[in-house]
Image (cartoon, rainbow, N blue to C red; front, side, top):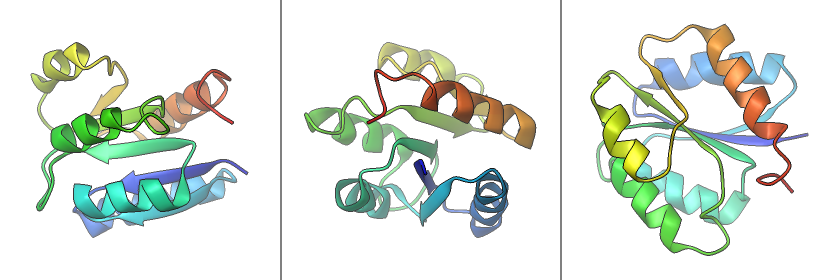
Length: 124
C-alpha cells in the first residue's frame, strides 16, 4: 500500500483529502504545517507528498527547499496545493510541475496521485 503525506494547515482540507485517499486504498499520514511535515517525512518516508503553500511555522516553499537538501528525500514526488495561480512559476523553477489550484476537484487530485505513483523512478 502506497503511503501519502498530506500537509495543510486547514484540518477540513486534510480530512477531505485523507478520506478520499483512504477510500482509494492509500495509507495516509498528515501534518498541519511544514515543520511537522518535514519531521514526518523523515520518520515515515512516504511515497508522495501533497503540500499546501501558506502555512504557519514553515510554508510550503521552504518545506520544498529543505526537502531538496536531503539526498534520501529530494526525489519524492510533491503535489502542490495553492490558492495562488501565480505560484506556478516559482515552483516551476524548483522543478515542481505538479500542482492544483484551490478549490480543486477531488477526482483531479486522485488522478494526479495515481499518475505520480505509477512513475517507478520515484517510488520504492
